[in-house]
Amino acid sequence: MPAEMRHVDPMVVEMITSMSSVRNNEEVFFIFGLSYNTLRKVSVGQPIRRSLADRIEERARKLAESDEFSSATAWIMVD
Image (tube, rainbow, N blue to C red; front, side):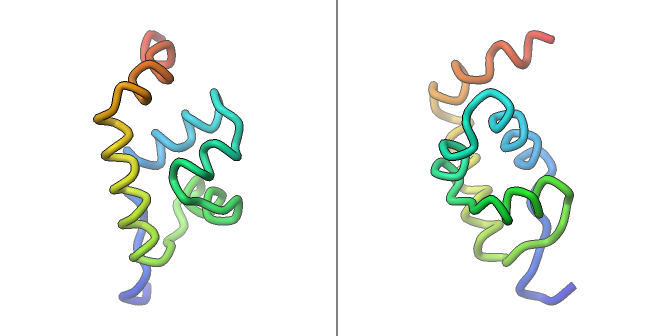
């Protein structure tokens, strides 16, 4: 794999894919700064540009710390 490419942390991938099942994709794209193509790559474990992966993981970290994520996904964690 080229040095400028890397995989997104699997925990972040899980967060993104679970959110996309409870919210519309446009909202997920906006929150994480993803395009549909990038969402597909991340979902199947393909590497993406390092700078984009870093940005996605940073947004996921901030979202996980916010009340918005907790309330949006609380029902998912009940199962």
